[in-house]
Every structure is written in C-alpha cells, then in structure tokens.
Amino acid sequence: MHLPALQVVIPLIAAALCALFRHYFLAWFITILASWLSFAIAILLLLQVMSRGVISYELGGWVAPIGIEYRIDLLNAFVLLIVSGVGAVIVPYAQKSISQSIEKSQQSWFYSMYLMALTGLLGVSITGDAFNIFVFLEISSLASYVMIAMGPDRRGLTAAYQYLIMGTVGATFIVIGIGLLWAMTGTLNLYDLAQKIPLIENSRPVLAALAFLTVGISLKLALFPLHLWLPNAYAYSPGVASAFLAGTATKVAIYLLLRFFFTVFGGVEFFQSTPLPEILFVLSLLAMFAASIVAVFQSNIKRMLAYSSVAQIGFITLGISYATEIGLTGAIAHMFNHAIMKAGLFLLIGAVMFRLGSVKIEDMAGIGRKMPFTMAGFVILGLSLLGAPGTVGFISKWYLALAALQEGQWWAVALIVAASLVTMLYIGRVVEVAYFREPTVKVDQLREVPSSMLLPSFLLVGAAVYFGLDTSLSV
Amino acid sequence: MMRDTIILRVVVKLLLPVILIFALYVQFHGDYGPGGGFQAGVAAAAAVILYGLVFGVSAARKVVPQGILLALIPLGVLIFAGTGILSLLLGANYLDYSPLGSYPKAGQHLGILIVEVGVFVTVSSTMLAIFYAFGGRAEDALVSEEENE
Picture (tube, one colour):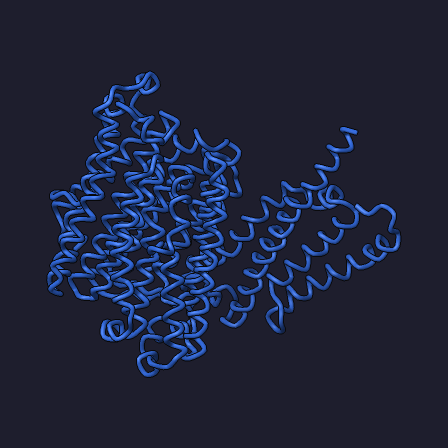
C-alpha cells in the first residue's frame, strides 16, 4: 500500500547508511539488499498497475494539486522496472569490480552514490510533480558526477566536470521551463498541468516552456548535437557506473520527454502542430549515422560503446518523432531493450578491464579464446545491438521500421537498416580482433572472470534473448 | 590564520555566541516566520567557518572534528527519512506527521520540527565538511612548506 513511497525511500535510507558506516563490505551488502528490494517493489507496482490501473499516492497526506503526488501508470511502472532491474542486477557484479578499481576506504562512498543515483532516477520516474522531477533529477545527476569522477583513470575527473557543466545547463533549462509553466498555470502537478495547458497552449510562455524543457531534457538524454558529455563520461568512469548510467540515466530522460510531450502538453495533436517532430526526426537520423560512424573509429572500446549509445538514442527518438502508436511502441521497446543491451555490454567490458587492465581494442587480440564466456556474451549482445532476429534489438527495430512504413517513408526504412549495418562494422571489428587474431603474451595469461561477475552479465544476455522471443512484456 | 589582528579575534569571539543563538532562533522559529533548518544550518556552519578563518582550520577542527562531521551528514538524512518511516508505521502516508502528536495539529507541529532538525544537521555539517576540504588543504600545504624550510 505504501509501496510508491518505499520505492524511493529504501535506496535513500540505504545510501545514508552506507555513508554512516563507511565499511566497504557492509556498504556492498546494504546496497545489494536495497537494490533488490526496490526491484521487488517495482515488480509489485507493475503488477498492481496492470490489474487495477493507475496508482496515486499522496505524500505527507496532502491532496494532489497542493501536495506532491506519486502517480504510477503503465509507462512509468515500466520505467521503474527498467531502472531498478538494471540497478539490482549490477550490484552482485560490483563487489569484485569495485574492489579492484577503488580503494577500500572510498568504496562505501561509491555505493552511497550508486544508491543516491538510483533514488534520484526512481524518484524522477515515479513522481507526478514537476518540481519534484527537477529535484530528483539533480540528486541523480550529482551522484553520477561523483561516480564518474571516481573512475580508475584521472581523465574521469575532467569527464565528470564536463558532464557537471552540461548537466547543470540542462537542469537549469528544465527548471526555467517548469517555472514558466508554474507562472502560467499556478500548479506543479503534471496531471493538473495537463488539464490547464490545453486552454492556453498557444500562448508564448507555454511554447517557451516547451522549448526550454525539450532542450534541457535533450541534454540529459544526450540527443545528438547535445551528446558531447556522454562519451567521456561513460568511457572513464568505473565499469559498474558506466553500465548503470548507460542502462538507466538516459532512459529516464527519454521517459521525461515522453511524459512532457504526450501527457503534459496536450498529447499527439499538439505535438504535431509544433515543429518538434521534424526537428527530432532529423536529429535522430543524424545521431544514428554520425555517432555510429564515429564509433567505428574509436580505439577505446568503452568510448565506442558510448558513441553507440548516442546512436541508439537516435533510434529511440526517431520512434518518438513519428508520434504514432507503432512508433511509440518501437521507441519504448527500444528504451527497454537498449537498457538491457548496453548495461550488459558495459558489464562484459568491465570484466575484460578486470582481467586485462585495458579496454583498448588492439590489446584484446585473441581474447575470445581465453575468456570464452565473456566474449560470447559480447557477441550475443552485439548481435542484438545491430538487430539480429531472435534478440531484443530486432523487435524494436522492426517496430521502428513499421512506423516508418506507415508514414510511407521507404527511404527511412532503408536508413534504419543502413545505420544497423554501421553497427555491424564496429561490433564486427571487436569480434575480429577478439577471435581471429593470435593471442598476445599478455592475453595468453588471462583466465575467465569469477562467476559473481559473469552471472549478472549473463542474466542481461539471457534477458536480451528471452525478450527477443517473448515480446509480451516489452511491446 | 591571522595571528596579529587582535581586534578581529576579540570581535569574532564576541560575535560567535550571537551567531549561534541566531541560528537556533531561525531554526525553531522557522515554522512561524522566515527560516528553517536550511538557513539555520548555514548560519551555524558560518559561525564555525568564521572561527576557522580567524583562528585557523586546525582550531576549528578541534571544535568540530572531521570524523563527527562525516557521521552527521548521513545522520541528518536518516532523521528526515526516519520520520517518514515512523508515520508509515503509525499507519499514515509517508511524511504525514499528523499521527505523531496527540491530535493532528500537534503532530504536524512536532513532525516539521523533527524534520527541520534533520535538515539542520545535514546542511551545517556538509557546509563545514566542504570548508574543511578546501580550507584545510591550504593550511596543510602551508604546514608542509614550513617543515621544508
């Protein structure tokens, strides 16, 4: 009954406990308990929403437009499931990986920040209050800056700083947008806004608010040309943090975009009366190609995956730009699928880093023979990334192509396929190095990673295949 | 550290109790007038920071040791979040203070006071921790420089 509050509060309290005890193993133990508990809560919430419809929870007992309301419908129950699921699966893996890359005395801080980021992202997804969204967004962003700065590489510091500046610009735009909406309507509740905005939707402040919100959220979700913070942030942060952020942070921003476009601002018709669909469409196509092509030329595999994230986000926003049922189905399914695939890929690359101590592609020669499971997982997720049938990637790209066909855009379908072929180039490059080259002396001494790291990764690999065959959840 | 400015040192010593009392006033009068835990926490931390600026960070560290600060930061969050859990246990919604007192209004009153104490603890100790982190660094560098000479 109080599940909506507990969803956010459990990781928050756990984060404070980690910081209070400051013991590396205890902190990990608290993290694993809290993250799996919130995953369980997310599952329960989704089941409740599916059986009984929208859940509304009044925080502090204050009634909705005045008080803060947590409101869960199918869309954000699904986002909660993605975020808490990725968050929970990573933690068992984290202990070994973090022990290697971060000093013992600092580890509890990492877990504390991990839980804070989880709190923030869950909070953004669950709340029905515009200002609350901003607060939780900042909680999660601040925590992720710290996590990135704790990376094994000193370049993590500049990456975190870059992200800090860009993220703060984004957050400021979001809060200006929310402020304008509040000035025009006198309410911060998203559903109250949704009722009041249609009456004044063509007034200039409301359009300005929409513009500010769109740009701010696009910065957070790393929509192409606003993605510059992302490659370094993912490349130089600890492996666990890359996997977590790649799987959750941008997905929550996409959820916000959907929520503001289609719930707050009067739905599909208003969306199509603005120039937004065309802008999103062009930027998405650019992201799909430019970022994929840049990814092909990366020597650092984490940077490669980060650019690939920018490209995949392009696929998602492409679906949003159509604003049709099929397009949105494709976008939301790709959001889910990309969370699984990218988190899994980053975990597997973290495993390579754990043994090899490097993520340069040329250092990985012949690694497929020494770490067969890790690289097999990489190949499966890579296939999914490029959309091979039988994996999740195929499903969402199929829907995106259908959405393009529905609009009669044959050439857009061709572009989707072409962008997927570029994906094959950069995944193929890694596969070629890993399997078809003689192992170097260094690679020859490697062993497979411990099962505590392999199992969580394969849970995600398994999910990528399972949801590729059984699409009842994600579609 | 400013060793030679006796006027500054005497004035600061006179000011400190006033600042701290004002912090407490802002804290507990917060539910009637402007103020609350955040502002009070900043004022209280400012008192210690002023002391540290004039008498040196090491002197301030003796008044409020670093170890205690690091424990206080999460403790404040726990006070806030714990109050919410308490109202859950008493059968109300999260952070609904009404059941905390004998009648709803008293409960709301008590609840906001407890929560603001949590805010005070976290805000003041975070401010100080940031000050120690930056201010202490210059002093540590100075000490090692003197040792080298």
